[in-house]
Length: 540
Image (tube, rainbow, N blue to C red):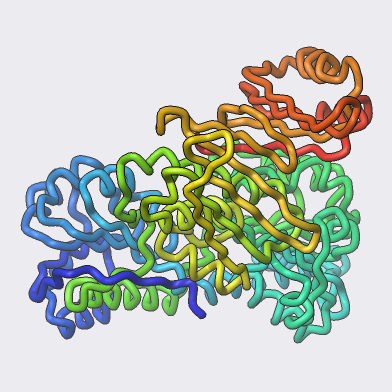
């Protein structure tokens, strides 16, 4: 099943006026007109010029040249929907559009093939020194010996992130008789086996792979996923490609690894800051291929995203169907709003604490919560759970479909009884290792609290940075945690401790002002004999 989901509105609008503010193919214009809409193609207008005319239109389509600011959204008094003909919506103020009741759509599927092919092009180029050979030939050189490359056939490819693009790359690699290792916590062993690839943890993949291709989304968990420690684990003959998202590969660490010879070569199409700054260390790094974010820059991809945007507009205004919304909300009782946010937080926590693919998600609503419509709570929890692992935006619309495509079963439970609390929201996430249970409530229906982590009762106010540790309860342990973090200049804002019995297993959950450096985490593991340790980043 596709990851595109839909919901039906009640008021189709035939003859809607659509402004196309960036250059798109004539095919897009024809499809809109054939669908009974009235399109106007007016690329290149400045913000004031757009604001002056936008009030006459019911829909707006942009690519990347136009930035949809709050000023334009305010001017678009009739706007019902804004579409980005492409994946990202960074050039649309989604928050302002949401406040104005405007649906924001993207077209996430049109670029997939082009993005995969560009990654493959970089893999071949980095294996055979193609850019350097071309440059030296134009300079009049004939340096065959200095340009000896390596074959891909028979080598091992590590794919970091196994979504649609990573799947295409892996399939092509298999045709070259490459062994394919996959790191993706949300891919099951069975799916990997069905596709002829081997699931591996990141360290094992880095140690074995001859080529590494990154296809993960940029999330708090994947930011700087590949840095100094990871380069140390790679073969000195390894070659790295990132055509996914800037910020996943630590750029300064990559430049240093190339200069020191710890990595043979690399190729990047995406960067933490775009355009790439003139003083970036990447510009002087040896054996590094750089391309200016060309993954979607093919005639076919441009045509497909334009067609997808037109098709979505026709379906919206003619049939009342909306697809690929990145901000679609659900009707929610105001008293449930705090619990919806809590559900998303519980989902995000669970995603960062489980180590294997999720099989079942259990959402329990207890107390007064059970008297209302609890379906939105399940959707918010799925959104939080899946948002850390998807290259496409996860919304309340497509979260159930993405879960179904991954083989995740959703089980919902309600009861008027809520032990110890007027309302209680419980999330149970089952993997092959067992079930992780998290629970929370909202004091006065506004202030969120985490009240259960695993088998332990706690009282924790969610924060942006959490450190959760399971350990053997012994005197002085909590003080040891505080001392070690204090010595590392990491401030503890709050603390919650849970245990079932004296000197048994316990859990401590710390809210911190800043993330904990990896070397400090390792010292904690060693000195305090931590059984399990989790660093979580939450959007609170």
